[in-house]
Figure 1 (cartoon, one colour):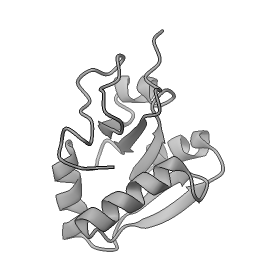
Figure 2 (cartoon, rainbow, N blue to C red):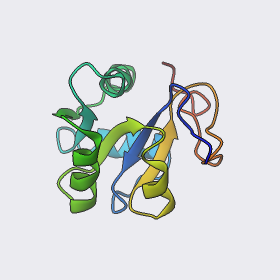
Figure 3 (tube, one colour):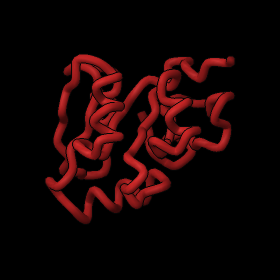
Length: 128
């Protein structure tokens, strides 16, 4: 199996979150300030840096919940305890394909080979 991880991070959401594209995600978070939190693995991780940059660029009010492991993030996303996460672009692929998570975008300059329909944040107009 080909890996998507070439330094990319997936922005993923729980399937019941109505956003399907980065602009819809930004609009949803802006329309509900302080309502949502996002998960990453550990404070200061690449995922947190990406979201903090997006927050600053777009004026988003979304809290951060650091987790010790990505598997804990996946459990809480699927259990409804958290709705948004930034995770590595390898481990999330099976969950996105199975419909257990929805991929919103990938960071980096290229789409990943295993999810070629998942847009990059850059091509959607967000700079990192």
